[in-house]
Image 1 (cartoon, helix red, strand yellow):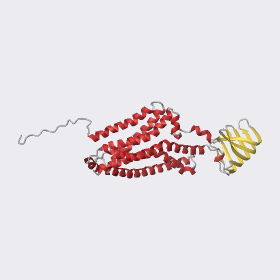
Image 2 (spheres, rainbow, N blue to C red; image 1 turned 90 degrees about the horizontal axis):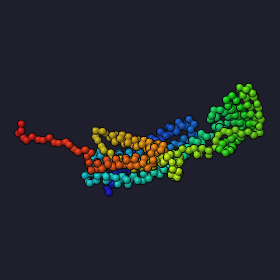
Image 3 (tube, rainbow, N blue to C red; image 1 turned 45 degrees about the vertical axis):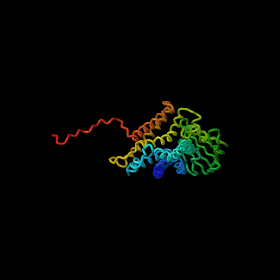
Image 4 (cartoon, helix red, strand yellow; image 1 turned 90 degrees about the vertical axis):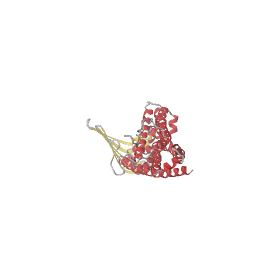
Amino acid sequence: MLFHSSLRKELARTFGATLIVLVTVVMTMTLVRTLGMASRGNFNPADVMLVMSYTVMGFLPNIMAMGLFLAVVATLARLYRDSEMVIWFNSGIGLTGLLRPMLRFAWPILLAIAGLSLFVLPWANLQIEEMRTRYESRGDLERVEPGQFQESSGGSRVFFIEKNLIDQQVASNVFISTQEGPKETVTSARSGQVEVIGEDRFLVLGNGQRLESHAIKKSMSVLEFSQYGIRVGSSPASVVNELPLSTRPSLELLRRPSPQHWGELSWRLGFVLAAGVLLVVALATTDVNPRVGRTGNLIFSMFTFQVYLNMLNLGQVWIAAGKIDFAPMMLLLHGGTLGVASIWLMKRHHQWRWLPNFSTRPRQQPQGAS
């Protein structure tokens, strides 16, 4: 049908342009934020572009849902503004007749949003979290550049190495100064090697000496050793169980039901359901009022999407806190919004009135009456 094909083509053009704009804006904001986090030591500066890519991938379900909603609103507004809707209405196509071509256009996008939110989103969050954890949980020796004094992450140690073989995790001519309250320790060794014992990482020093001094007791002792171990961090595997829920696969959340897991699932499924419900909301609410101008529908659409997104966040918090179950919250939020939008759509389609019209025409006086 000519109407269906022309509507889908215009929706595709508008959605593509909207998606490009939204992705560009999000990439710019993400790049600025990622650079700031890298400057604070949360990420390796060499991984900035990789972190930005994973972050944008995590935002894609939100971006695509917003882009689809804005594309439908912009397309319908253009049809109303150019009086094309009047032509289609006069040819026997009502508002409900727009649902079929809109759904035929939107179902691949809804399927992509489902895949991104249920599978790609947790995977991208996991990659970001692993890079952050790997960089922040580096051993104190790994923070040191050869030939430079470097303070440890806790600020209680100062390291110096003359040479570092990164691949073998071996250092030569190691100097370590440790301050623990009134006790100060200076350790020097010819060599050092990083070893993982259990969930801890140790710097095993060889052929050195250890000088301990106590400021209060005014004592000093010297110890020579052939091998000495110092704990310098945790093993990366020890933090796997501490990863946030946003990094857990959706199937794992389903296999281990709990309020927190249901809350996370409500957030991920919410993008798909919201994108579908907002199609009906856009069709029911979009109209052109010359007094409002062209930006009226856009402002209303952004406000509607933001309110819906805030309700998704609120629902996730309530489900995780045990204030409401998963099914009632999903039915109340998405089902309730769909019901209100459907009633609004049918009201506009059938020209229903919320209240009866009590206005009466003034009675005309016969001609010649005084």
